[in-house]
Image 1 (cartoon, rainbow, N blue to C red):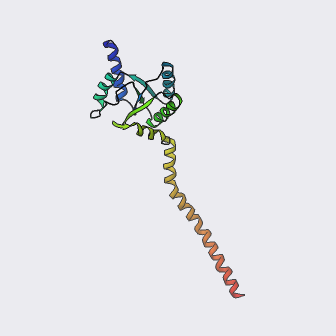
Image 2 (image 1 turned 180 degrees about the vertical axis):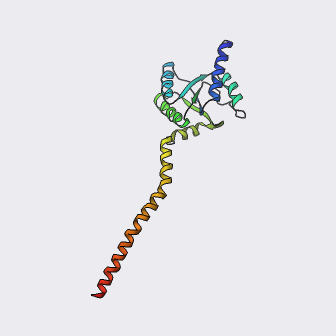
Length: 176
């Protein structure tokens, strides 16, 4: 690879490593070019992209941006970087679906908020509900006590009326 190409690839990696919501590293040993095109299209739909990187260049750039993280094991063998620009959870979910469909990628690790996470953690991210579902669950949790209070307040007059009716009936029975 000539120097200009290397510089261009390093610049692209620098942009990806500095401007992202998360990174996922994967082994793509058996991937064919038509599969990589299909995967890239699926990732484009969720504002993520796949970069097939040279380990030496990726290790060089990663060392600049993520100090204190050992990338030795990550940058062994064939390595792809999946860059999430919008939502890491959606990217992890899409990647899980892609792995089921193509059976060619193997997750090595990920980086979220500058912290290294294992492949198991990436899998856990993929099993989380979507952002919308999580927000709905939070809203439901916040509204539940309010609905319980409204229900209680609605039942108080009804219970009062039922109690007064029972007292009235009892007095009628006593007078007869």
